[in-house]
Image (cartoon, rainbow, N blue to C red; front, side):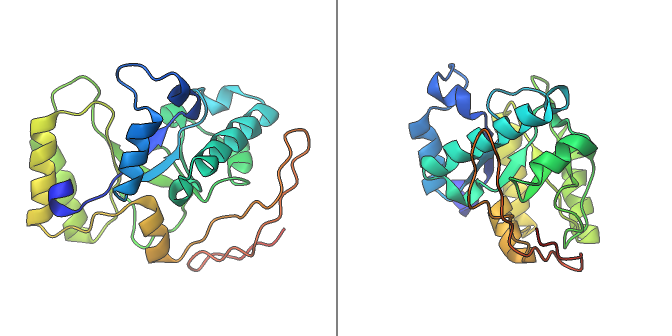
Length: 219
């Protein structure tokens, strides 16, 4: 990706950074990605399924993980979350919206561009610990180009050879590769701003939110 000055998005469980395993990044490695232009976004504290938590527990996950990102200087991606297990429902989403500007969840497929709903972003997910099907991935890219779509590709385990082929193909086809924060700037949607938060009593003040042709909200 450095070859073409591409940046990506890394979703991290912030509690895991304190004691990373051999397959997880430590704070120094995360900082290097951030300095290279990557967005570092929330993946919750510890990869707990939000739909199995109480409203208070969801708020705790959101507050603490976002706070960690900001305190460690990863502000650029602090307004975005990729949900553990891609799981959410109507109730969890109401809490998530108090903290984050957008979320990527369970829905599989392409997105219209500009985005219609930043809390309802679809994604393509590459298999974990399996051989990637390059022809399928290539079709994702070709379909994106044909219909001028926005496609989010989620990767857990990297297959280096096919990944390099993917990056080269994106360059060959002159596809715009952007992070979530760059996408937010491109489409002019802006995050909810949280000015004051207390763990025992959450008080939020949100700026007027105007997203594309959607209604503006003021709390």
